[in-house]
Amino acid sequence: MASTFSLSSYCPPSLLLQHVSEKHKWWPKSLQGPCLPCPPSEPCPSPTPSLWAMGSMSWAPSPPWAPKGHVIEGMMAHAHAIAEKVRKKNLENARFMLEIDNAKLAADDFRVKWEAEAPLCQSVERDCLALRKAKSDHVQIIATLRGNLDSLKEDLYFLKKNHDEEMGSMKACMTNEQVEVDAAQGPDLEAIMAELRIQYEGIARKNKGGLRDLSVQLEVKESGEALHCAQSELSERCRFQQALEGELDSLRKQVDVLEGNLGESSHKYVLEMDSLQATLCQLEEELSQLCLDMQRNKTDFEQLLRIKQNLELEITTYRRLLEGEESVPLLVRSAVDMIGLLAIADPLFIFHLFCLCLTHLVSIPQ
Image 1 (cartoon, rainbow, N blue to C red):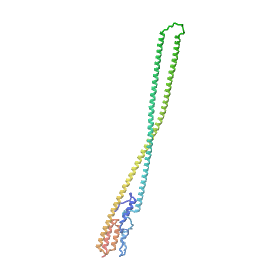
Image 2: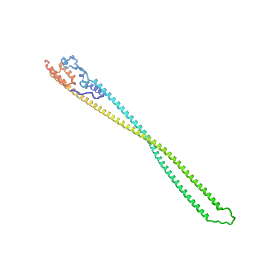
Image 3: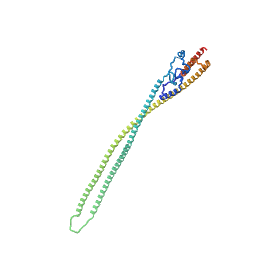
Image 4: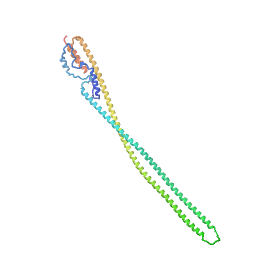
């Protein structure tokens, strides 16, 4: 029975050596030499030249599980090469895992930076909202001041109007009254009072006008200063807001770029891991196939060994039938040795050899 066993698939060297040591324990002693040992009482005869010429084979000891036509050294070298390839694949897998860990650490660093920048961005946005609220408050204050200024102008206008009316009524009352004094004619009090009244009214008008102008100027000055301060502060806040918005946009772009790089790296490493996983699965399948082939070859060898034992029993039976148990011809012994040597090689050759031995036994003179 020809075997299709081959070490073209993967097999660890430790498993191979363990299998060899286990097989060598029950190695048949009759297969460790070119012939069976002779009894001490009889000389060891040389094999029949015709049988050796017919066999024309050189026996080289090899393990019982080794298939026909293969050399164990080449198989072991191939197994070591396969083990080296597996080791290199493991190192490459470890390198990929290290690169994946480095990428994860870089992603964590970028995430930490983003988390650190996010509160700053939120604080800037809150400051911008506060500035907008302050601006609206200043606008309301300016509108309130302008309303107060208009109301003060109206009050001043009504006060002036009331004062003019009172002065007119007082003049009318004073002109209607006539006082006569029987005394020497003195200075004209009416003319003096009229002159004093005119002077007082001029001073009052002047003071009121100056006071009104001064109050208006003070209010306008204060309002202008407040408006100028508010405008300068607002412009500064706007510039600061624009700078923060530009920085925020740049940070968002950096985050987008980093997320894109992280996605590409993750996709690439996922593809590489899938390919490595597929390679590992293929290696596992080949290893399981190798184990199945070894188990099948072991079963074939056990079957051949049983066939050998059965053939030896049959040869012993024929020998007892033809010659008897005490005298064994050299030809039968040599045939038994050759059959023992070739029991694991080829059952068809054993059958032909057995027929040839029977032919020689029949041709032996009685």
